[in-house]
Length: 472
Image (tube, rainbow, N blue to C red):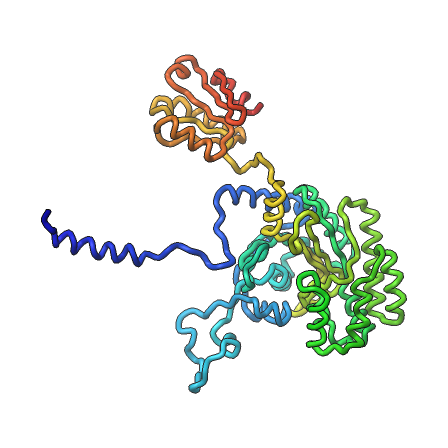
C-alpha cells in the first residue's frame, strides 16, 4: 500500500476543521421549540387570546428592547439586577475613563448600555400609553402576547426567556375592572381545564399593616420579604426583615396578620379592628370588600380567597393584587397582576390608573404537560396526507388535495414517489390521522383508498365523496 502525501495534505486541514467545529447550543434558560411543542404552545396562546377578544380587548405589540431609562427603577432593586442590558453599538468603551482602576460593571453600565431587553410587558405598555395617548381611546383595553427576558437563575418553571400573555385596562378607577379580570382568569383556566386558586390582596392593606406595626417607611422591604414566604418560609422572611432594620416588636406584631384565620369576611372584620384610624388600610379594606361583592354577584366558578401574605414584589402596584396557582401541581404562580395608579405618571401622564393581569404561558405549558391535559386533536396539525405513487398519480391527487384545503382541512402530499413503507412511516411519525392513496386501479375507477390510522381500517371511496368522508 503506497502513502499518498497529497491526499494527506488535503485530509489533515479537513480533520482540523472537523475538530474545531462548534457544538450547537443555546444560552441557559432559553429553549428551542420543536413542531409538536409549538402546536401545544399555540393551543395555549389561542385559548387565552380567544378569551381576551371575547372581553373586548385590542392587540398591541412593543419592541423587544426598550431604553434603559424606561425600565430602570420600576421593578425594585432586585428587579433592576435581573435586567438584560444591551451593549452600545461600535466601540462601547470609548469615552469611559478608566484612570487605572478596576472596571466595575455597576459604575460603567450606564455609559456602555443605553438599551435593555424588556423585563415585563406592563412598563413598556405604560410608556406606550403615554406615547400614543392621542391615538387611543380611554379606557383603553389592550392585550399583548410577547416574550420577556430576566437574568434569573434557570430552574424548574423559571426561564430567562419566556412569554407573557397580558391584559390591561387603563384610564378607569372602577373596581369593576378588577372583577372583569377575575372573570377572565376563570374563563381562561376553565377552557384549559386547570384547577386553580386565585389569591387576592391589596397593597393599601399592606401599607396599613406597615403603619400598624410602626414601620410605614418599610413597606417595600416588607412586601419584598413576605412575597418570598412560599419559597423560603417564615423564619427566613423574619430574618430578612430583621436585616432590613425591623425591630423584634414590629416583626412580632406582623406574625398574626400573616397567618390570620377565617374566610374573607372574617378577615375583613379582624382587619377593620386592627386598621381603625389608619386611613390607607381602611381604604384598602373597602376596595377589597367591593371587589369580593362583585365577584360574588358574578357567580364565577373559580376558587378565590383573601391572602394577606400575597405581596407581589413589584414596586408599581398600588391597589388590588392577584396571583393564581394550580391546585394539582407543585409550582409557583401561573398568573398574576394588580392595580397600578402611578405608572404612566413616570412618563409624564398623570392621573391615569390601570389594572392588569399576566398569564405565564411557559408555566401553564408545564402544568398542562404534567397533568396530561393537552387535547389529542389540534387544528395546527396535518389531518390528511396523500401518498405519492408516481407522476400520473400525483396529477390525479392534486385537484382533490386542493379541494380539501379550500374547505378548511389541513392536508399535504408526500413530495416524492418513495417506497410506500417510507411514506407510511412518515405519516405515522407525524401523527397524521388519515392517509389517502391512489394507484392505477383507483384512477381507473375514480376512487381513493382511505386509511384511518388510529382505527387501523381502510375503505375504498368514490373520489367525489372524499371531502364528505374526511369531514365525517
